Image (cartoon, rainbow, N blue to C red; front, side, top):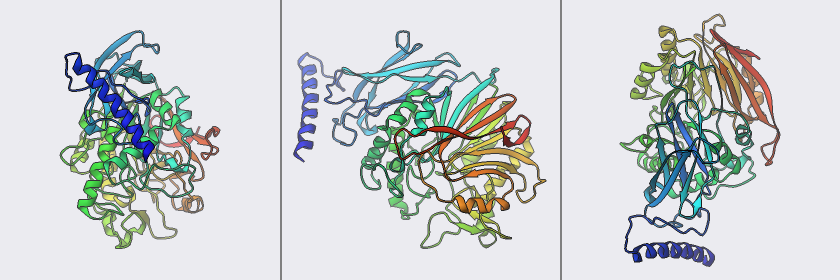
Length: 520
């Protein structure tokens, strides 16, 4: 206790001394222009995100002691940012000052615009005498411009306690345009076999969620991947609480208590991600769904499958999370009146999806879209905390693909801690049914799964699923041109050690104009 107090007192005294010097020179600032830090304030690294053709968001968060909420004073701190055309930061193309404000955890989000399309840039931050590492970002090609190739990765389910983020390290070694994270970037709960630990109990307050995010951001492999290229984000449940919907969660059923927890989790999520300012929590929501275009090659739709959804169907009093049900015994699973996206997001998807003229039309979301019958025999089993539990809304998207004639639809998903490679059929029980889309579901970065025997036993019930592997951890790397889409399933031999080896487990391809992945 004494050492913590002494460190905090020293940091506060250094800050007060810098402020006093500023005032004694005849000027009083709302924020200290030259703060003094006893520790590196950029320990959480830098990141870029939400790239578009003329810019991207750059992010950092001042945290000289990431786990002490009183390490910085409750006042804004001025931060300088720079964007350059070269990695030596000699050719500065944009710079400015912004405020790291205490009510936002002293995070900084700069929406940089006015840059050239389809090229890399480099950026850094300064505060007082401290400078951040240099990060690399990139702008997209302009929409509908001829674009020959795209290489990117997607990942999900990175439980800090259950392994090391070797998958992120491997992404940082690849020539990627961007990374898409499909949810469970952090975990709010502790379970399974652990090799390291969260900084405290399961979070419910803002300070606790901030500490969890800090622990993940301190990981060197995560920092390297964030500094390597821009990211897109959506979330799943563990950024807040297991199996949550818009009003409650499995272990927080009271709506008022859950609302307070959700607000804290959403604020911490925004503070720690390179998201645009419009994503800040306001009017009881946080807008994260979005659409982007990579030239004329790919339209990217990233929906939010958590915030607006109706409650899980057929919940039990003692089981408020997801479970496998027989669809015949739970008619709500099929109800067209239920929503996964919420009405406003449904309109957004319907109005824009597949209208760009791009070769590939992508839905990148937290949950696997493929129909997955999880009951052996004549019954049809659906897991209720997935698209399987919202088959009415799922059917509406399939009908949209059919009626609009949207071609080359590719789904990207996470959540299930397993690789799945699938063809989404109009009727999954009829192998002759038209193929409407292809889907690649990535396994987890670290999170455990022990369903190999079960999933393998279910494959005869699901002939549209070409491949499944529940035994490995990793991510998916995609190499896309106008002729084909290649997906490499990258796996780590052991996530419980820091420097596990990485290899490609299998590769699959989708040919332009022909839905359904085949071995590459």
